[in-house]
Length: 155
Image (tube, rainbow, N blue to C red; front, side, top):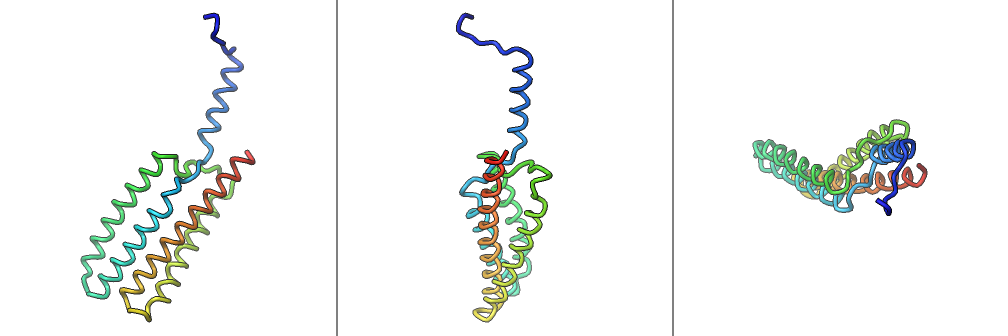
């Protein structure tokens, strides 16, 4: 025991408190998360567009089930790999970021869908909306990472 250092109770409590604070801090999203999740949205938009264009409404239901399963898997892998933005702090403006970001992604998806409609009807509109949502989500994840990094530097 000559080379071991022993913490006194005050030092041990301070170390435990710092560890708890670090555990509560949000962490950056893995770099692959935005593009993979965005690609899933592109595929889903294309499936919905094809289902509408070819009057195969059952395909939309299949698309929703597959979308939910794949997004759940991607989210789980992201959370396990590096801790997708978990437990954001209440005062850090995350609620506004999430609501504003979601509204932005939906607006981009709607605009892209409407812009692509003249190119090929429902199929093009679905693919355009999916692409808009996918790119919008990717950008949102990049912005979330930047926000998390700023919080880590500041706090």
